[in-house]
Image 1 (cartoon, rainbow, N blue to C red):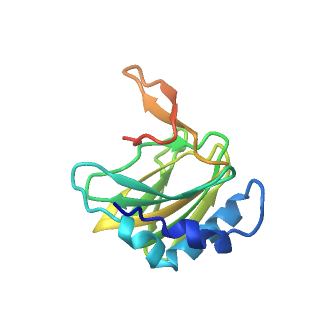
Image 2 (cartoon, helix red, strand yellow; image 1 turned 90 degrees about the vertical axis):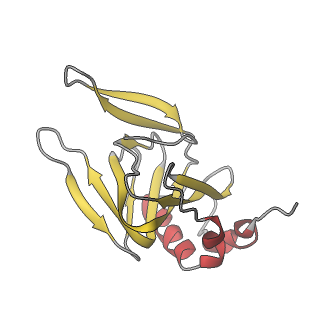
Length: 171
C-alpha cells in the first residue's frame, strides 16, 4: 500500500523560518498551501455525516490541515490554547463567527481566496455556508495539541472544556 505524503516533499519551501511562527506567517503559509492544490486536493472528502480533517504536514513547531465542510457541519466556539492559526478558504464558503459578550457574534462570510489569522486565545467558530464540500486550509504554531471548547450550560453559564487538538470539534 502506498502512503500519500505530498506535503513532506514540498511544504518546507513554503515555511519562512525555524521556530514558532506568528499568526500572519501562518496565514501566509495557508495561502501558499491553498495555491498548491496538488498538496491538498487528494485529501478532500465530501462526507455528509462527519466533518473531515486531514493532516497535511506536521513537525515540532507547526501542523497544517485540510478541512472539508458539508451542510450542517461546524465547530462550535473554541480557542486554540497556546497556538496561533492561519486559515485560507480554497473552495465553497464558510462562515466564521467571533464570540462577543452581551451581543450576537460578529459574522464573517469567507469565500475562496479569503484568509484570516488569530493568535493564542482567539475565540471563534467556523461552519459550512455553501459548497459540497467547502474546503479550508488551517495552519497552527505551535502544533494544535489542545483546544478549549465553549459550552453554555442550562443556567446560561459559559464553560470552557479543554480537549485534545486532534479530535473533532462540535457545536
